[in-house]
Length: 163
Image (tube, rainbow, N blue to C red; front, top):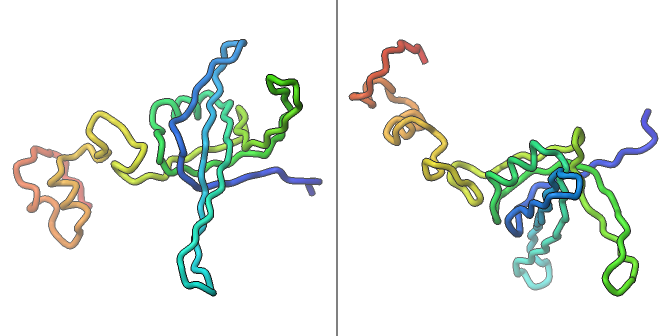
C-alpha cells in the first residue's frame, strides 16, 4: 500500500485565456486559472449564495499545452487532474513567498475539455459545429424515431449502413 497520495481533480471554468511561456531551456509551460463554484440556498434568509474558488494550474506536458494553446479560451469548462505542489520564490522586494498550484507533469496529469459543441472556449473552422455532416443530417440523426435515409434525400451516400 502506498504511503500517501497527492492527486487533485477539478471541474471548472477558465478565468482567462491560457498563458503560454517558453522557458530558458526551450520547453513550454502553460498557466491556467480555473474557477470552481458552489451555490446553496441560505437557510435563514432564503436567498441564493455562491462561493467561487480560484485554482492556479501549471502544465508541463507538451501535448496538453498544444491543446490549451489551440482550443481553450476564457470561459471554457475543463476537467483537470494533477498534483498539488507548493513552490517558494522571492518577490522583487526580497520577501519570500509561497504559491500552491495544481501541476500537470510530463507523464502525470490530465486535461479534458468539457464544453458541448459550440460552447464557450470552442473555436474551429466550421463555427463550433463539430459534426461534419450538413445541418439537416445532424438534426435528423439526433431526433431519432425517423428513417435517416428518407429524411435526408439529396445526399449521395453510397454506403448501405444498417444503423
